Each structure stands twice: as C-alpha cells, then as structure tokens.
Image: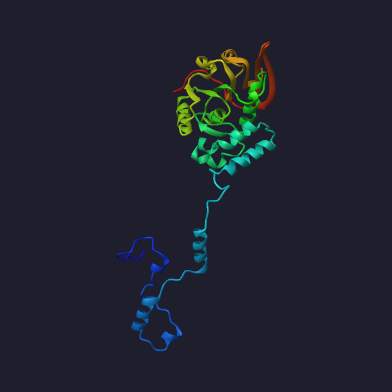
Length: 292
C-alpha cells in the first residue's frame, strides 16, 4: 500500500522533497558511539534525504537534454523516405510519383491494428472485402499514367478519374499530381471511410463520388487520366468514351478465359485507341451497382 500523502505537498514531488521514513535507521561511526535512538532519529529527520543512485541521476540528466528523435515512429518522414528508396530500387523512376509517396502518410489510411505494416510492400485489408494495394503496385500504376501522346503529361496528370476510392490513399497521392481528381466508390461504407480519412487534407481539387464506377463519371468528362483499382473481363466502354484525346487509361484486366489479371494501358490518339499489355497484377474483381 502506498504511504499517505503529506499535507501541503503536491505530486509529483521533487527528489529533494522525499524524506527517509522515520523508521529507517542508518548507523554510522558517530551514532554507534552511544547517541540515544531518539536523538539519532531527530538528527536523521533533519538531514536525511533520499539520494538517487547514479542511473536515476543519469536518466534525469538525459531527460533534461533530450530532443525528439528523428526517423523513429510512423509519423516520421524518414519512414516514408525509406519506403521510397525501396521503390526506387524496385524500378520506379518517376520523381513526381516518388515525391508524392514520400509525402502522403500511408499509415493513416489503414486500420489501427495494421499500422506497423503500413510501409511494408504488402496489400492490407480495409474491410468489406477490399484492400489497399501494395506501395509498389500503386507507384507503378500511377507512374504509367504519365507519358502517352500528350507531352504535357510529363508535368501533370491533368483531370483524373479514379475508379475505386477504397480508403482514399491513392486519391491523396493523385491529388498531388493532378489539377483535378474525381474518385468514385460503389461501397457506401468505404466512401464514408475515405471521406473521413481525406477530410483533414482539405484538397479543394479532390472530389469523392458515391457511384457505380463501371459507368465512370460523365458529368466531369473527358479525363486526361483514368486509373482503376479493380479488374474485369474487359474495359467498360464508358471509360473509353470518357478518355480525352491525348489521355491515358491504366487498369487491370482479366486475360481471356482466365482469372489472371494483367495491367493494360490505353492511349487515345488522333488515330484512335492504342492498347498495350504489361505485368501481371492481382486486384479485386470489378463489379457494378451500388452497395449501402
């Protein structure tokens, strides 16, 4: 049981306020010479003070000169910088994409139980059968949006349509790389979650839409860039129709007669649509309709 607090003292106490309890008797050459116990206790009570051992003294000195450590904790820019270094080694070359990924705190878009894995190159569940994609996949897909027939795409992605908002992480990245971003999510709980996640950022040119992503979003078409986070057997015609001249679309698509997905890039040129097939990927299936 803790000793009773003394009146007039406020906690926490300083070390010089903590007295040795009266029952503690410390013998010395002087007290052993024949002083009465009462006199001994009186002498001790007037001068006996708990003296901290060196480790405690050292800890106090360390605390006095302590500064916030850098590179420690998920809020540290160094954590994201190390992720970016790994992405660079993995082949991501776009400095704009790497800079955006170094800026957006990915751990704030995942569930609390998974934050320690936020900067690992792995996909993580975000609920409702959906996932946040691996950083390397996000980086490669957004990187592929740059280029194409429009020379201006080297500097900005222009007007972007994102299919599948999910938790909002990729939308936050795109907002740093585009003039305007429309992100469509068909699952109302995820739409609400992304809205809450992105609210502190307050990006005026980022708009979330609760809607059927297979239909695109015609009111703001055409789009310079379209990126999808779900793959079906083919690309919806609405996406192709809403792609601007000089624009580029990046999406996973299932290979014919297979569940295996590959990344497909479509460029709209003056001669028409030009398709190219890239690496294998694995995304959730593309579905239509709204879910509340």
